[in-house]
Image (cartoon, rainbow, N blue to C red; front, side, top):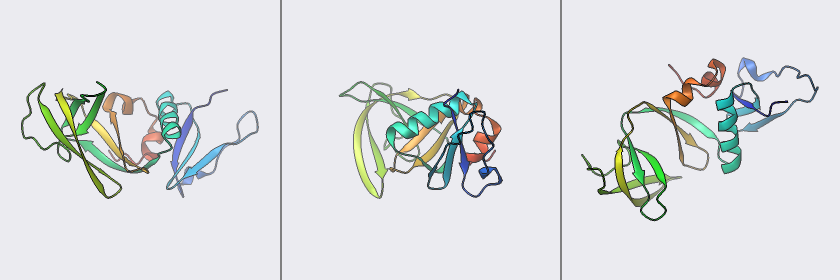
Length: 156
């Protein structure tokens, strides 16, 4: 049996759940979203991410016009940041130190990163319940079922 999940907007016509072969129905409500079993592998990955971080999407912010690939100078981990809202440098050069301004739950934090380049494909963004931003590349979003896209409030 699959442990994959779908996300549905509360109050949508799809809020009534069908019966599954084992007769057990599972759904979990998080704000404006309800999660249930799915056949989409990408939605399963999202559900796992939401559950692990205990942070769920509050609203869809659209696609980023410019997404910077940044590397943490301490850990070496790669992170993406929206260039329009976060980066305080007009035209950074690869390898330069840039300051990123993060707004989390009405508090502003700044961190320095090493600029690695720009993402060359569309990136979708959601504001999460803990105040962070979830960023997903277009290829990942294309792997979602149409119902999953609709319930994640992607308007295309």
